[in-house]
Image (cartoon, rainbow, N blue to C red; front, side, top):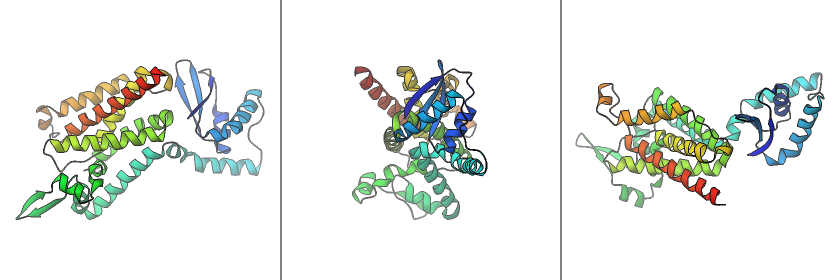
Length: 286
């Protein structure tokens, strides 16, 4: 992600946005204290963007007239809705995989759950039996360390996890790249799953451990490196942390929230804060 220019907060950028999408130049604007900041996704398009911005600043027409303009506008409209997903491919891929697993679960049911739990699950003598993690990994089923994160047990569970994944994941990929997002996804997914398994729980799932890791990372970066552009409303931080604490109490069971992967949430949050602290401290030293 490359910062191109700073514009006054009250600048009307609608024509510039339309022209940039018509030319298929990946970009986005962020609102910061000093004004609007224009960011470029692909550095190879820097020259094309600068030429377009200069024409816009001079007040020149940015889009061709007639049929070609309509064709470009139509193409831009078709491409525009895909642009956010292309700018955050790791986040989009994780969401797509969660949705796909949820769809297959609605057809195959427990077969999918048993295939993605952290250890194999079976039935013997009318009772559930669970495999051993060490034996599971030795047999080559390494994917089970991460796969529970893609299991969701209901629409509300899925929707809320995807909402926070998209909100925080886009920021991480936009400002620190897809490699950082992939690191957080793998570390928090595996770390949260292991934390939950350590309590003796096997039947659990969800992307919420990763969501809490992203929350911790984005919040810490917004405090320690505000110039990077990260932002999270303070009330959202209070709500999510308050929710995590609430589900750890006995009161949550009275409202039907007793079966929550609390250790996965806490483990993910710790992973996000540790990774955020390391990278913010490393950059500050240099």
